[in-house]
Image 1 (cartoon, one colour):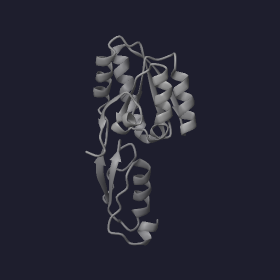
Image 2 (tube, rainbow, N blue to C red):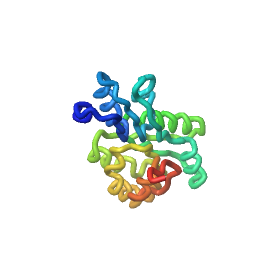
Image 3 (cartoon, helix red, strand yellow):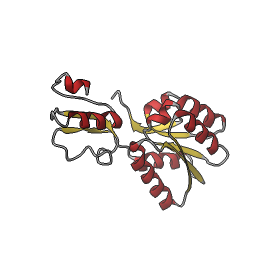
Image 4 (cartoon, rainbow, N blue to C red):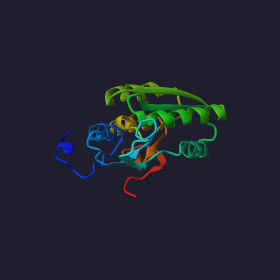
Amino acid sequence: AKVVADKVDMIIPIATNAAVAAAVAAEEAQIPVVYAAISDPEAAELTGIPYVTGVSDALNTPFILDMLLAAQPDIQCVGLLYSNSEPNSIKPIAEAKAYLDAKGIAYEEKTGTNPSEILTAANALVGRVDAVFTPTDNVVMSAEGAVAEILTDAGIPHYAGADSFVTAGAFATCGVNYTE
């Protein structure tokens, strides 16, 4: 609302929640909104709006899971760790489930809405899964240092959707490098 009141020429929000808020705030004034780092613009209802455009950082979930299987070909169960309050996690988690179902690999979902709940969810996966997959999920990322410690101590590789997760301790990614 402040940038609209300031009559800026353009709003450039980064991430889904900021982009949705900017699109709503800019509607009456029709200020152009050019978003970045939106995993699923359609699910966030940011498509088809004449004054809104941008770029997506959508994951290639099957590629990451192919990497997981190349590293762990005998895997029995994959943990899916994500925040159920992040709209950008919905599509890659659905893709992961479909991929794992097609390969006959079991999975166990654990979610949370804040970093504390994510840590509880990560602990709940210990002893139950052989690896963990997390998409580019901001809530999980905010707890990644502790999540990585939990999973590493348990010998569970954590495959994630962005290089920032690996920098914070996850095992591997074939995801987005936001610097590049």
